[in-house]
Image (cartoon, rainbow, N blue to C red; front, side, top):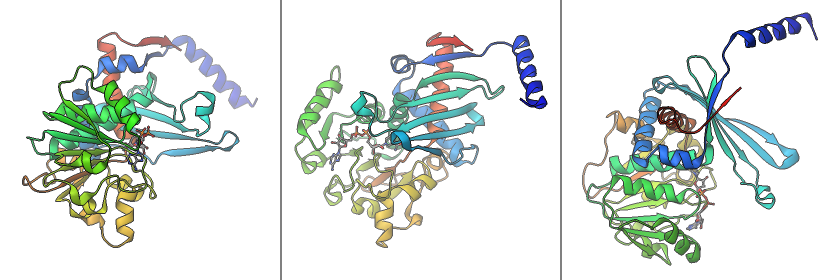
Length: 349
Ligand SMILES: NC(=O)c1ccc[n+]([C@@H]2O[C@H](COP(=O)([O-])OP(=O)(O)OC[C@H]3O[C@@H](n4cnc5c(N)ncnc54)[C@H](O)[C@@H]3O)[C@@H](O)[C@H]2O)c1
């Protein structure tokens, strides 16, 4: 150990004697569900989007470590949103072999810091936070873009993200009928059984995407598909569409017809969507779509910097690929509410 190291270590030891312990609130999914409603999550992502699009955030490119010995990747999505006092990181790992070990293929955790001191003050379930804020993004877009009298909602995809996508649309529109479609009708039926309990809407398990989108006012696609999951030309006039699943150039779930013929196209972040999603990149490579056809970001819409729907006939389309900004602001609101309600488990370091 060098002299400088020894001095630094002694200073840390002495400082530890003089300073307070870090208090960290650990918040699990069950607690998060009771702390934050979907309506509050929608307000949180609107605040995040507004700050992001006005340039009031610092969100570096996510860092990626390859852990090749275990066929894994560890991603670090971090940033700072001064207006929300939100500072921290979401750790997301992608380990395709995990399910064989009974472990999630994508474990995720969010760590928040006190912006004033840099101390860690919260650790929460990143998987549920991702589902909640991603649902809330579609909810915010649906609230701002869909026709107010929308009654029929179609959900395509019944995986991990689907439930929060459903809750989000139900939180912002008076939906009477929910049509659900995915590749496997048994999964659709099981999904409906799980999510429909206590709800007044009529739920329909659909055997085809044509059946699912007939007469739909709002459609959300949340799949891992590489090909369009419904026929865009069969969509009713004035429909609002949310595209949630595609985040690589190979993946695409939204028909080119929708991408190229929507009256308004809103994205969560311009950089993310234009560089990542096959929904845009595929028609772009064919010369059918240009970046200029994108109306603006969700935050521009919130800030009144771009136009939303202008009549009942136009198609509106929202595309999201996600960003740490939405995790951090939503997470910070959950942490603040947990402290107020004395929820979560506090540990000291
Ligand atoms: N935009 C964001 O911020 C964000 C955040 C989290 C996840 N995602 C993405 O959302 C997607 C869905 O995530 P998940 O966890 O629910 O996935 P999942 O694997 O749990 O479920 C995928 C669903 O897609 C359905 N599907 C696949 N191909 C289909 C097709 N051709 N037609 C109809 N249905 C089809 C499957 O049947 C299944 O129901 C993923 O690509 C994920 O990366 C986006």
